[in-house]
Image 1 (tube, rainbow, N blue to C red):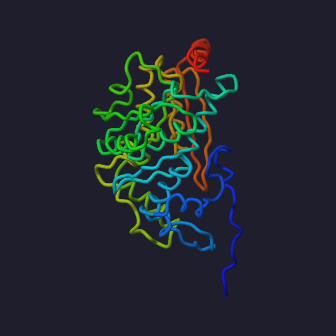
Image 2 (image 1 turned 90 degrees about the vertical axis):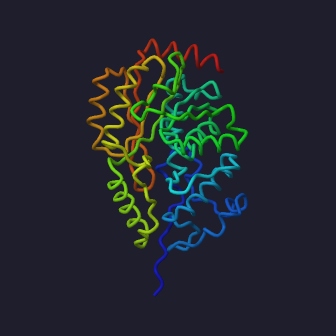
Image 3 (image 1 turned 60 degrees about the vertical axis):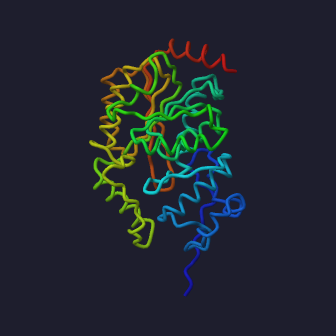
Length: 323
């Protein structure tokens, strides 16, 4: 007996309305622009073209095709052994931050390279700067404690003329610092974004990857990326909560440098202590923006130290002058 073919969802309604991947991937179009993707595209259990999302190489090829087809990035690659970031979720963060600026700029998104963003933990793929620059023209500073990540991100920048002079990536030499050593005392940052490590140890990260793999494949545990003891993409001492609390405490020192600080928060249980930390540093404004992708629910927490008057001055001088 043939299995009943389930009706497939044609639109990912939880994604941001401006996300280029709300619909199903157009693999025919992606293969036309990136023929190297073709060997990895096969019918799934529902007879629909797809890739094996437990295969790191297949996911990397899909990312390369999406970045070329949707964002004009013709040269993109990442080193083996590193997590291949999903494009739709990264794009959602950027679009939600653009909406935040829009709400604070008389209903208009500030665009162009004078809008400067800081990506804390830019990673090997340089994904947030790519999307933010290609969608809104923003310029970026990317930081990371991993020299391999910075070398990889800088290769991507130097290989794509549209990113040159718009994105700069710097090695953070002190793993306890978030802003020190990266932005100057007099430097103005419109947005600070961060996708923090989720887990508190390599062992916990491996267990988390195993759980996700078993949920999304036929026990293909061998496809799990080995996060390694030195790879801090997914884990850090104290996990997500400690990482974000420390970033909040340090952000106070840069209160006047940044219009808005923000971070992804994957675990809802961490919100209570994050809000307490924001109260401790006396953040003037705090906002939480829900995000959803498939079965995964996360959120962005944003905060600022600028008073209403200071925010008005910022947007009426800095952003208005960019129009």
